[in-house]
Length: 125
Image (tube, rainbow, N blue to C red; front, side, top):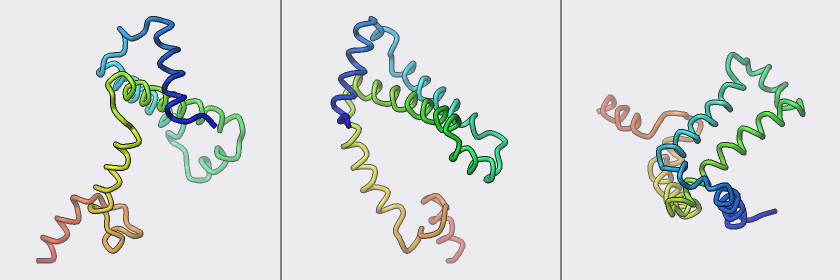
């Protein structure tokens, strides 16, 4: 299995060999992330839970999903590489923030966003 550093280097080499740096502004890479994420989302549009369960068991559908996940990952890594973001450190920091925002006591079994906890607290007061 390749490490994140190795994959980042492969993507960087791939893009530099094609002289693509000039096309990879923060805006264009963010658009790429969004576009590819929406292509992933489109695979699930109008699907029931039963349909999605079947998709997860179908190798051809899984391949389509995997391709879109890879495209999102590619643009995310490329953005981080081009503009010097440490994705692993960013994720670690975000998890610390999320641990505070989503305590087990408040969030277990709930999909309420953390800022709604504040509204619930005000309603209870």
